[in-house]
Figure 1 (tube, rainbow, N blue to C red):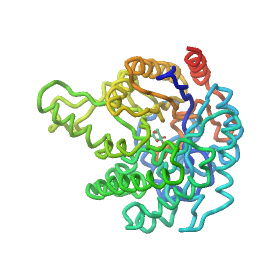
Figure 2: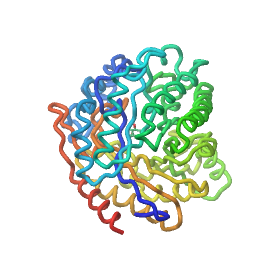
Figure 3: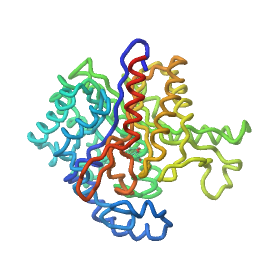
Figure 4: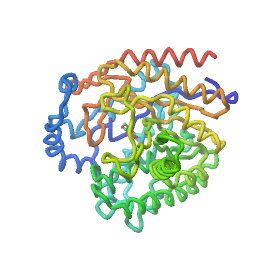
Length: 420
Ligand code: BGC
């Protein structure tokens, strides 16, 4: 797939905490506190046999503790060899802030060298690094003093970002300052099921969103000062919402839900970005009687779902791409994927989402990359290890890697599209 004559980036995405292993941050602390309760809560659900067969499974406490994860920290070269063999020419990953700055203001030189090696390993294999600077995990010192709501939060983060960009500017062109700021704020300050674990704090939820966008603008300027050619943006998960009908009630509900869930500050981010990082997972309809429904005002048709119960709705990627087209900025699909431990639906999922992406491109939307979530099975936050999102399967007993059939189908698509 070529857009406006440029090459297209094909690859997959990961994040440090979900695959590296051996991290010590606010999440690793949260896991130790919550694993037992998560496992107990899981007992109340009805799990299909094939999920209970996964190791670890949702009923086991160890499922909820990231621990050694995929040991990608030590095996990144091997993993990049696999990505390369699958035809990827780019890779999105994140740098773990808690490794680089384990104590406030004290930077760990060894860890800085580690990520330099990671970046160089990608370059050596001809893969463009897309570097995420914050994928949700926080150094313990930062979270303990109040996280993003501490008055010096923005300053501290900008100092970290400036140091990193200065270190790697010769090897990195694409910086993603945040991964899904809205998802972070919603889980941490409204649902309360992820760190810092506050439920229903609507004002803090909003305040965090605001601090994040203000900090982003600060970091954008700082990065550009260090390297004016850097391509800087964020990635946000955008849901394709449509309404039950054209009735004013439904249209109003649609506007409100879309505005909030797709990040009320989205336009501000885009205005200060060189590209748009778009992650697509969901489609939702507004209910017939939005204000009276018991289960919330959105629902899915769920004709086909992933192991997670998430609806598979490829057309939504096209609809959102069309909506984003109006900003006239390059778009990278920085995540799109599904939990599918039996690898039954992934190949078709990829094929269909790329088909709809191609349709948007053929109608003039400037899409320049597709990153499948994820390269490896990984630690799916508060759900733990059982959801299998990888193009590559991980045996968590031996850490053996096994390429899934769908990864080879994705490779075929890349080959065909690259020849076009
Ligand atoms: C996040 C990933 C996560 C994936 C699947 C995205 O929202 O960026 O960290 O694993 O969704 O839930």
